[in-house]
Image (cartoon, rainbow, N blue to C red; front, side, top):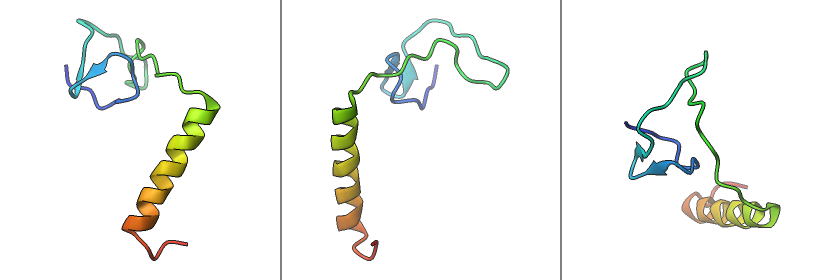
Length: 61
């Protein structure tokens, strides 16, 4: 089944690796489990991402 949530542990190659899932009343997957990142890892990825966009769009302040 197609999936766009790359932060779910069940995601691989744009698909859910589970055989079946259940959706809540908003249409969100109830089985979704997010990858755990420490605060330090999250800060590193944020910094890396903002540096990428700063270089790509040098007009940003």
